[in-house]
Length: 73
Image 1 (tube, rainbow, N blue to C red):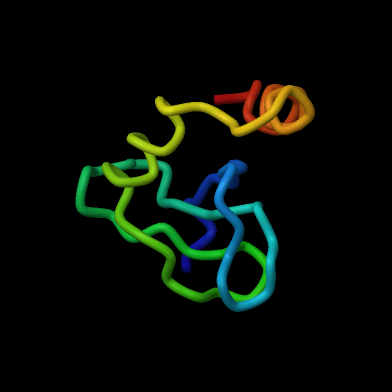
Image 2 (image 1 turned 90 degrees about the vertical axis):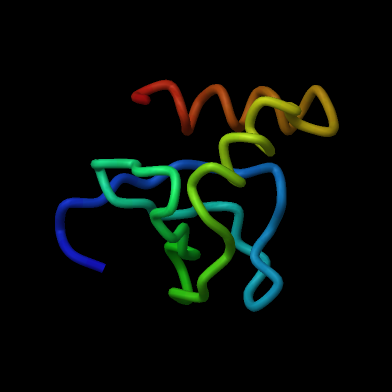
């Protein structure tokens, strides 16, 4: 993925490596692919990631971690 990308955290881990840190293009079109920032595996599309983010974290500790990582967005 090019240097014009943004990292964010999803409550759902990458099935390949277990990381929660994901990467998407800065444009963030609904059909942009979201990849794991650690191993590069394609995880989902941006509109699907937004749905997961709207549903929120599964626990209070996940909420605190996501708030810290995603606050720049």
